[in-house]
Amino acid sequence: MHERAVKKVQEQVADAIAHGARCLTGGKRHAAGPLFYQPTLLVDVPDEALIMHEETFGPVAAVTPFDEEAEVVARANATEYGLVAYVVTENGARQARVGRALDYGMVAINRVKITGAPIPFGGVKQSGIGREGSRHGLEAFTDLKYLCLDVA
Image 1: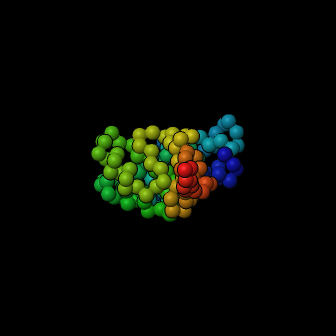
Image 2: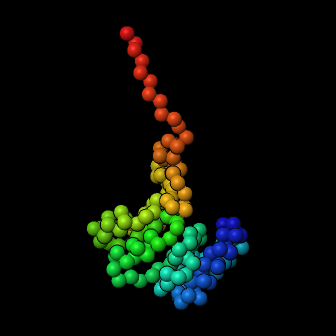
Image 3: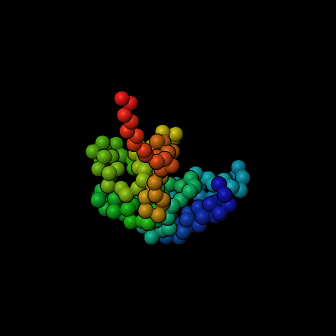
């Protein structure tokens, strides 16, 4: 991580706690060095907390309760960013519904690792346009040409 990224994560965690979130583990720099941050779990994070509507590039999971599926989808989509969203549920129908309803470039369901060489990486809204990686990313750098050749 870069120093600015670590400071941003620290600010987001402190802001969430100031807004009433509870930190169950982590919440500070890691002993491995100044550019490391402990894996952090925040629970009961209110929508007003910065971490709920800013992108976080650090090992922090912000968990908040919800009553209705439509409510939590609306809350998750109420951000100007849209790189990746994470969904945890054993309900297959819910996985499909929520995955389609989230306005994000990538949605991980019941897993954390979402990237790899064959996977188109990229977001929507203020998280970018287009994709990198995979054939989809390469297509942005190519021009399609149709060649019709009469060999007779």
